[in-house]
Image 1 (spheres, rainbow, N blue to C red):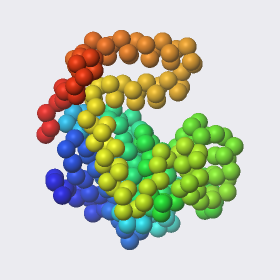
Image 2: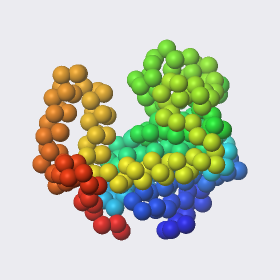
Image 3: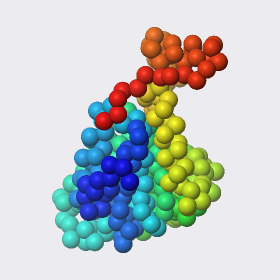
Length: 267
């Protein structure tokens, strides 16, 4: 596979054109996050912030696990200060992923529990296989989720449903996740990787600035009052209207030909 790099014993990175794929590879523990794995993922996410040659990102797992939460064995040997430091580092990584300018696709191939569900929620689009399983089961350990799952779920998908899921720690199956809008599509396991790459490639081939502005405006607009959001959307539209890609898109439409958008060179 082109440009494949193992940047950590449990994290593989490769580029497919303008798409960066981050694959958690810890099959024996269903992708569970260790402290060092979270740190390695954080470094890769930080590198994406200014990577102009990467225009879309796919996050996925290996085998039966996407990310089956944290490595509970590490919890057992941690004191409170160490435990809280790990939670803080994880949150910073999750927040950085959510804030990336590039569109991000989570391809959830298997178990996405705890931090696995939380990091998927930091992506712009979630696709999952029919074998996927979601949940925030921390309450069953006498804990609560600490990576942003409950507030993200409640804001986007409803407070009462989120309370029921979080307070019981139950498993959410793919069709329920799709019905709730948590996932965009449920896909057969052998087709998930290809579907995620196809979607990411489509996003990468569109005008980069328009895609990034669309992502930013949706994220910011959700937090604004409606009038402010509408005003800022129109301002963003006016700014995009003056870009070369917008002129090309309009001219190509009128000339009934495929547009040729400007793109930064690939590294």
